[in-house]
Length: 236
Image 1: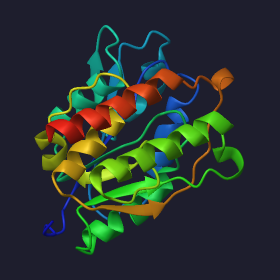
Image 2: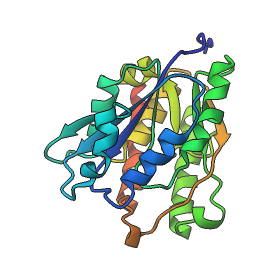
Image 3: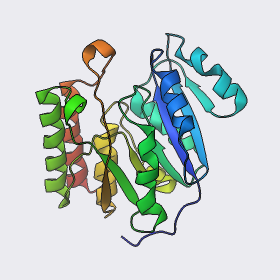
Image 4: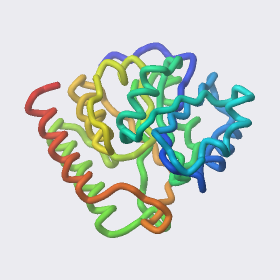
């Protein structure tokens, strides 16, 4: 696809649901990063009941963070759609509040777009050391990437990564429908249907375990396989 002109601003959407133990640290780390373009941080609280939003009240008051709230809880996909609709940046990406991803990776993800070499960039995890949550977690992610590559005649190593940077107009154009974790596969399938070539950049990653609050289940992987096939068959 023809490369677009470099974009001037970025919105980072952070969907949040009961992340009291990590939200403040995640935001502090993000705010500390020197970004190459003006950046808006948009937190979407998806019906949290643990008071996590209270821990970032000063960032909201200072204007460092925009806060949107949804009640009741509707799922990660619904929170992302709200953030996408409200974002003001030319580019858009997502950062989870669970400390699995390092916001210091954002400048390297943005560089191929700012250089005019790509429209869409994914942060690809390597699954070494603390990144390997479990054998089945890693195998499932690799199978999903291979399945997407096969269906859409592409080569991707990580489609479930949270760190995906694309023009905000792309995020809106694909008309995301999934409410849960299936939104990651849905976005990838629809971008590939648009004939976008996804540029991958290595990132750091530290997977948390069930005892730390990891929410994704094996059923989410099965749903993602079906979502990708449905998009490929329907062509949209």
